[in-house]
Length: 489
Image (cartoon, rainbow, N blue to C red; front, side):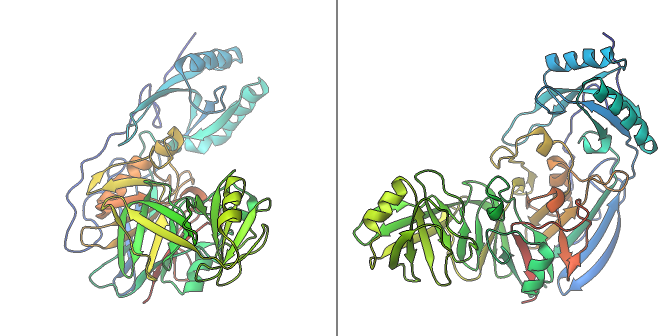
């Protein structure tokens, strides 16, 4: 069995990422860094700056050059592009039986704060210059005809050694001079998705950026549901994933922390029970609260207790109806439906107690009208140091940690200034995006002492004024679950 090593374009028999030591950040204000770019060979970045308004500057940042080419990656039995050594060796034999020479590549996914490093193996066939992609496609077609599952891979996407390039848009908001405020938006409803530019336009925002991940695994009619805490104007519209990172906005202040939420229903007869979710599809025996922002009918097959603004039960009804203005609905099925039938009689009061807890301070955050929360996907920087919490935040995978994607990032500085960044990707030869380690290094370089990753990929959108200033990877702006907005007042 022959094995050869692909040494150019970032391929090697073993590869891993290392953290780059960065200089201390400025404490007095937020400003574009003077240090060399933190990624790749650390080139001097090119930047242009546009003043949006007092205290808000937009930077167009470009760094690096493309030297990566293409290869053909052989998929493993589980459909992934990596696997165990034993499976990789079997694939090498299959490739060679098809008349091609294969390379067995050892890849080390770097360890993060809550997950150790992982060693996997990939099988690659050929190495072509950037201009020769069609040759890679021809080889891929031959292997497919031989019964192998393969894909053409641009090596800049791997997450291993690269020279770039990177293209990012960065908004720096100086807490000393900014006179506006911050807000979250779920668009016209929780259930439906909407573009960032549409949400920004409706709120007359100066700047808008896509928010956290949304639920693509629920009913198509409900896929605007944020995966994590969402608070808009002091109203909890989606419960937290306990411990997941979030950005808490209040007036012109922004804080990054971890949250948990609790919602409790207490009947007039003293019976008390937990509310399992807010504005989402229920599971068996769950009690879910629906607010007027839900924007869809409650699920069928359960019981609805319709509450007025003072938590008085207007009536019990079969489920499957819209939530009217000024009302809320407690929906239960199974055991939760039984609880409503026993303790939510018409005319009774069922008090809803909603709490949002800051897990760093262990204190409740008052749900005042100026409070807004956008949930993040992964913690990146904590107290000035790289601390990537991929496992806790549900993204402990090779694809999310190591491979490069477009990224939407938010950070705060020591003096409370806000940093918003959109790193474009998935455009070979123009911009490659970032993996989690690179995203953390990038935010530290910009001066963030706290930073998190929001939704990325085709969702990455940064709007200034009325339109995106980056280039979304889908080729057009994607509708998303929520957005973080910067308002003029």
